[in-house]
Image 1 (cartoon, rainbow, N blue to C red):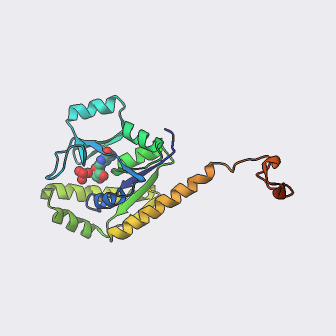
Image 2: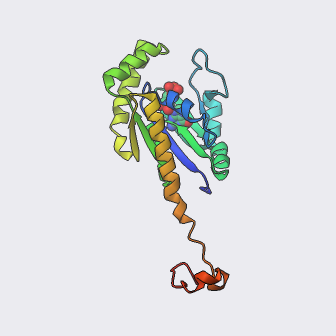
Image 3: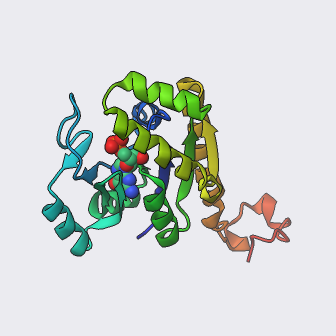
Length: 216
Ligand code: 5GP
């Protein structure tokens, strides 16, 4: 894949506030959000094609087997995956493409595209995470327990990430991610080598300074 844009993976335990942070980020034009495919049931208020493309197990497996997914994982008994085509198109257009995905998928992305930037959004504490999940009231008690267990596993993989942003304030978390993205884009810029020019193409008054390393 041509990397004219930037691939940014955002992970973090369920309830860490990734969704809220991502919603704020994509208000800026430079970002494009990848919509995942999942076999999980839509929650109240979720719309097919907006939060996710909701699909069956069979259709998901076909997408996966036809190599239409950039990465995929199983999370608490459901499949989740990133459609390849949208990401490739948006990166080629120079966009900062956001993938809001869990850790297995994030590690697959890093292996395939080492230039991808991995950001982990961490909750202030596990207690706060549980409080947020209960308050969200979208899952049964058993599912909340599975998600907290999964969160502990995910927190153990934090060292694979390039950056960790603790989400104790959404505003600050958004500012920090914007700063990371700006820095990463600037860091890549020098790969466009200094333009070489011949001595004759310089204005007369500069020709005597022809010792500059960028001059032929
Ligand atoms: P939820 O069911 O709460 O919407 O998502 C559960 C987890 O799956 C979250 O950690 C979310 O980031 C992750 N997830 C969402 N889409 C994808 C995807 O396309 N690939 C992977 N690997 N994880 C995903």
